[in-house]
Length: 95
Image (cartoon, rainbow, N blue to C red; front, side):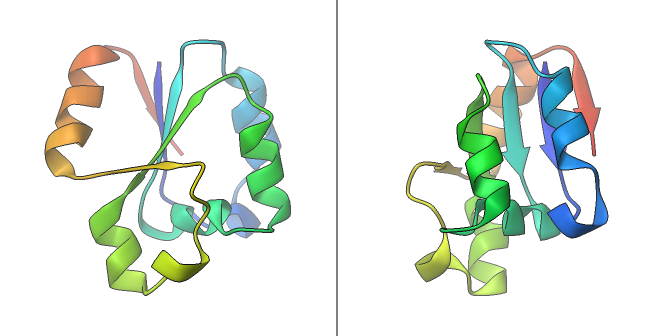
C-alpha cells in the first residue's frame, strides 16, 4: 500500500496512520506532510521506526525551503518517481 501524507503531523494522527502500515508499504510525504520529516522531530522518530519505505517530494521540499532541515534518511523523489510508486502500489490511501 502507498500512503501519502499531505497534512502537518500536528494536524493529523500520525501514530494511527503508522499503525495501519505493514512491511513493504511506502509513505510519501508531500505538501505540509513534509514537516514530519524534519531532522530531530518526534514525528521523524515515529517514521523511522515504522517498517515502511519513506519518500518525500523534492519539489514540495524546495518550495518550502526545508532542504537544509530535512532528514537524509528519507528518499527524495520527483513526480516521475511518484508515478512509479503509484504503479507499484496499486492500493493507496491519502492522509
